[in-house]
Amino acid sequence: MKHKVFLIVVCVLAAVVLFVVINMLIIKFNGKPVPAPTIPRGPQQLGEGRKLTYVVMGDSTAIAQGAPYKDGYAVASAKHLAAAHAVTFVNVGVSGAVANDVAGPQLTEALRYKPDIVLIAVGANDVTHFTSGSAVEQAMQQTIDGLRQANPAVKIIVTGSPAMDTVPRFPWAAQRIALWRVHSVNAVFERLVAKNHLVFAPIATETRAAFKADPTLFAPDKFHPNARGYALWTPVITRALDEAVRQ
Image (cartoon, rainbow, N blue to C red; front, top):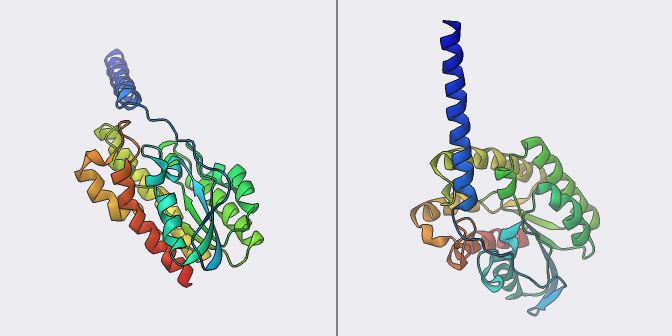
């Protein structure tokens, strides 16, 4: 009897390991890689009017990986602000960044400009890297505190994670796990928004249905949005920017 139970346990464990390996291989090889674009890193001047320094921080989506940089939400949101302001625009986002990267090198770079308004677009890699909620919260609070030490009046907008459960590169099981992780990570962002009086740009909840229904909104890597995909995020972000400016 003990031998039979042992064989059953071994078979179950082997099946689980095989299932995990197959899913990892699908994730690795499903889709064609798209390179991170080379973007301007110095300050750019846009528009006329009251002066406003705008800094974008975040991950690969902040630099529009999967689309031409000009078609991403960073450039689009800067142009939106420039319709009524003389904007000094700086993008310090880096492909692959997690919340801790934003709190480290990106914060150091952003503080050079003492920004008036900041968009923090991070969370997707914390979802896929299984960063703990406490680690995300600590890193984000460090970022918020650092920005406010440089400029107590700074307006901060956060997006949280996009709807990673819609990513076609992920097989069904990975999408279910991603859905749980997105809810978990974004709950941390929502607490930070309430605690620190930030503005939330809920790209996951407002665009999930569209991405789920239309896989052509993704780039060839089946992971990042393409230009049409980023165009769906942009109005969510610009509405949040408008709310922040009015505060």
